[in-house]
Image (cartoon, rainbow, N blue to C red; front, top):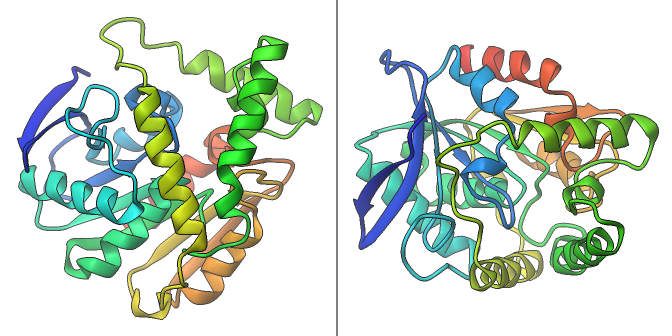
Amino acid sequence: MPTQTLSAGGVDFAYRELGERNGGTPLVFLNHLAAVLDNWDPRVVDGIAAKHHVIVFDNRGVGASTGTPANSIEQMADDAITFIKGMGFKQVDLFGFSMGGMISQEIVLNEPQLVRKMILAGTGPAGGEGISAVAGVANYDLVRGLFTGQDPKQYLFFTRTPNGIEAGKAFLERLKERSQNRDKEIAVSAYVAQLQALSAWGQKKAADLSLIKQPILVVNGDDDRMVPTPNSRDLTRRLPNSTLVIYLDAGHGGIFQHHTDFVPKALDFLAR
């Protein structure tokens, strides 16, 4: 699909739109730390878009989107709301992975009428366990990747078991499938701003998640190093209308490792 541009709120947002506009509720993907459009697993995006209207986008100052990168989750949520309304959507479903799941929580707390359902994967609540340490974990594995000649996501997203290592290799190969018109890599300034946002989110006072009445699917691996798995269980306890899926022998990228199971579960959840 071509990368398009939407001008809203003084920002030119880069986005891609997949699936049929069949009158159903659009599903907006919200991405993880340091990610651009091409960091979404094609099996997840294409699998959901086969039966659903999907939009992936770069937030302000990320990838091909213009503007100064936001250094708070709250500002990222405001920018996402600007993009969603700029697209003309009155109501959307949200799929937030990692940092994107934190942005999703801010969106639904600020504008609950805008959100019908949410999928929260590999994420946690404000003030959640280990979230303020994400920068340390990410930078450690960035250095580890440089020394071993591997993509840091092999360490960050997947377990070091044989299954996890093979799943990571397959995922990284899938990310290369789009050969033309790829998105711009994230700038160092945007990465640093996102680390600042995650640190502040991890130290923020917990929100009253009982206010969120929308149906929510919470998903993670059982051994998430980036946003520790207990955060997913905490979310499920605190969100009154939520369901939890935990994948065994899987890490932060459990939804990518187990895409053949996750995509049907996501489609079923969205269709109900």
